[in-house]
Amino acid sequence: MTELFDQLFVLLAHWLVGRFPVGLQPFIGAVISVGSIIAVFGLLFGITTVVERKMIARIQNRYGPNRVGLPFTDFRLFGFGQFIADGIKALTKEDVVPRAADQVVHFLAPLLLIVPVFLSYSVLPIGRNMVPIDMDAGLLFFFAVGAATELAVFMAGWSSRNKYSLLGAMRAIAQMISYEVPLILSTISVVMVVGSLSTVKIVEAQAGFSGPLPHWHVFTPWGFAGFVLFLIAAMAESNRSPFDLPEGESEIVAGYFIEYSGFKFAVFFLAEYLGMFAISGMAITLFLGGWTPPLALLAWVPSWCWFFGKLIGLVVFFIWVRGTVPRLRIDQLMNFAWKFMLPLSLMGIFAAGLWRFLPLGVVRWVVCSVLLLVAYALLGRGLAGGKPFAKRRYQYAE
Amino acid sequence: MIWIFVILAMVTLAGAMAALSQRHLVHCALCLVLALGGLAGLFLQLDAQFVGLAQILVYIGAVAILIVFAILLTRGSEPTQQSALTSSWVMGVSVAVLTFGSLAAGVLASHVIPWASNPKPNVATDVAVNRIGEKLMTDYVVPLEVVALLLTAALIGAVIIAMKEEPK
Image 1 (cartoon, rainbow over the protein chains, first blue to last red):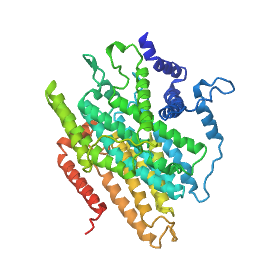
Image 2: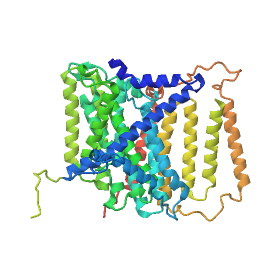
Image 3: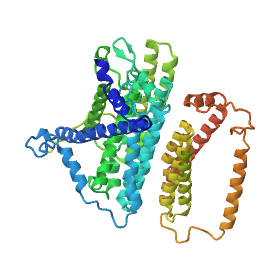
């Protein structure tokens, strides 16, 4: 019974594919996987926009959108119909293109942004046997298509022939390139320990239990450091607060997508959120054990439930950080990436190597944890510029 | 199978020719990206996953962006007034034909291509990424270290050039 629920979508897909003639079957299989990814993650995007607005609103001591419910009815549904209304608005708004803009590049930029983002979902293992493509070099594929999105950001910013747009695009690219380095370096320790670039094998390597703890990589010192670094770099890669300077600059100009309106703006918005989901999915695959359950006695819950549960948890964490932490300035952002995160990720690789070769037991825990904590403390104190750490003073308006 | 190669080759050639003939430099850079993408597709069609994906990651993700930044930060961002073809195109075409001829002769005379007259080559048709890693660490470790030294020197040079001058 648990097997049935676990492999429900796989069996459904096989049944659907079997109804077609043999020659057409690979094509139909591909259409089914692509269609289900677009449908599921599109719906998740819609719900996330409402959840984000309501969560940030509650953090800021106000209600979020709570009026738009089911269309044509009086049910308010706590405001969760808002994404339907936003979608209809984006589709029906006038598409304004500046006369001086480069028409072809302006049109192609949102396209070039959204296609790699959807491509990156094809190597995420959503459940047991539920990865759209099982590539040998799946992790490399994910980062390669992530790199292709940076070009689209530049195209969007440059083709608008707008100074703010170009400035926002250059800052966005500088930020994305800088944070790609600690992002990829923090995954190298996982690849070293697992010995494969395939996402399916990385999840399978985290499948056992030792005592109550699962073998997830986040429960090791180098894995925890890698997870934290990966999450911070993921927030920066998807231009999310506190790293959203390229798009929230002075809050009245939207950075590289100023000159986009209507559906193209909706595509940019969609690409940002879908990129956030994809990179959270990769964090789950690499560090949080993918679709494996956290406790052995919870193995009856289907594997895809665990993946989506962890994904929702990470998305809520991202929204929480957005509502809490103030925005970083561009020079603070770049210093953070190159001077703090890059050395720490190199220490993480070193710690992963030590973990592999030290004898099992307390020794390797202590050595790796001490190494990473000392590096963190020294880097933090060293880069603070000599300012003393004092108790925070609050000043209120009287 | 041959059709995939033809389509990818057409895309690469079209991108390269467009990159040469566009008036606006940023358009040239973007057409170059198309050519590089076509090359990556050719690598992937030959089952060379690591090289193809590294081509996308490095060339499209970093080198192309470097090129567009260089175009933007210098004066090349206005469209040129001169035509795309120069007057000495005869010389250019003959040099290109000569280069192509020598490269083609070198490739066709290689012992890796499965002609009937060649002995059966003992190279694997699909190379897993970990075999590349093993070879890099055992047989080709000296080139690896030399490249690492070169990259470190380039990084240090870039930092020195971009560093703010201390006011004397």
